[in-house]
Length: 331
Image 1 (cartoon, rainbow, N blue to C red):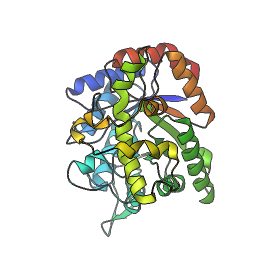
Image 2 (cartoon, one colour):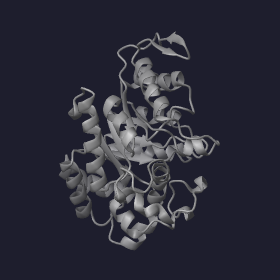
Image 3 (cartoon, rainbow, N blue to C red):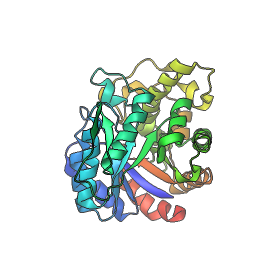
């Protein structure tokens, strides 16, 4: 199993870079960030510094979207970094949540997302593609490579992952949900004539190593609220008795709204509806041995990477614990 770390690009950017350098030293091979440039700083500027100060870490957004940048801009950003640092980027992408909603826009449709993934990959790898009705190619790309990993929860989105994406990002560490979603992606890949084993499966969730479970739950409750934004969309589309597992949908019944000013932050007041049970299922808490046990279960379901959201009050300590007590037992 590979390990990644996920950060928000809060200022100062030097702190984000420092944590990524420390993460690579401790055995993390992927460095991810949020991509919501009103709430946080522009990540692609910071990626250049992370890549310059690490030796092998792969970096990318978790996740970008097809609508806040022209697809040619997104492709050129990745291609430029890859040309400078040797194909060390990955494009995590989804329909868009905070980046779109804070500027008064809805998430993109799956049709737009699917077309964007195709165009961004083709351009970033130096091939010609039609964009805005005209043929476009980035002429300076040489030997470019860009994997597209798509974040998804619902049946139609999971089908698109299986049909088109190089990787699948699941933002919850619940084994039951992982089993259902990975199964759906693999089935869609097989139906499309693709090798299901060629799709990287990535679970992304907060992790906090320690013994004070009540404090850890309070620090990580924000994640249930963030996931709840996507789940609310699914319930609106499919209904409470639709095809999405109840393990994912039941808990949002008490949700009354969401304030993006506190998005992804410990103590988010919009997440009081999230019960302790959901925090325990969606996140990794407790001593290092409990993390190893959950990760071994996820690995048995086909998870290739665990990406650790590091938004709480013990960031350095959790990085150190993973480096000393967790990563070596899973790699």
